[in-house]
Amino acid sequence: MNPTFITEALRKLRIESDLTQENMGDMMKMEQSSYSRLENGKTKLKMEHIPKIAKAINKSLEEIIIRLSGCTFINSTIDTSTNQNIVINDAEMLKILLKEKDKQLLEKDRLVALLEKLLENKK
Image (cartoon, rainbow, N blue to C red; front, side):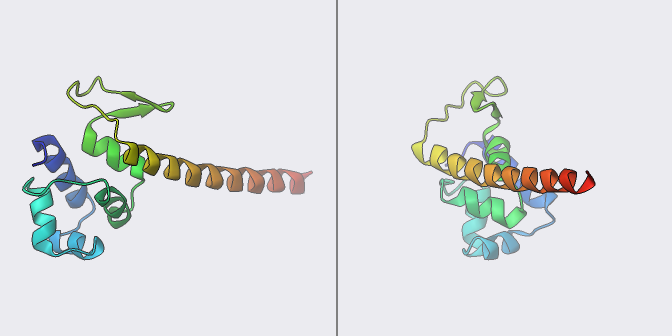
């Protein structure tokens, strides 16, 4: 069973994205009833769900994890001041965050190269 703050955050994320439970289920490749059980805390939210949620509502993995956990990630550290009961030590979560970090670094490098090219053309 998921803690109430996780199920509330999941519901808020869905509603903020103007999606129904059926929409979320379709995008996550599950039945609406299965998604509903996740959102209502009757089925445990698993790490494999996080990337699917992020993709469905077009948010980064980090943002989804922050919203669902109540933790804030600052310079690769976790600030649990918002909820002292949360411990994030799941190796799978760290792998997902590392993949997301790698994607963001590649995008940053692409943007830097583009900006350098633009500056060079202005000379």
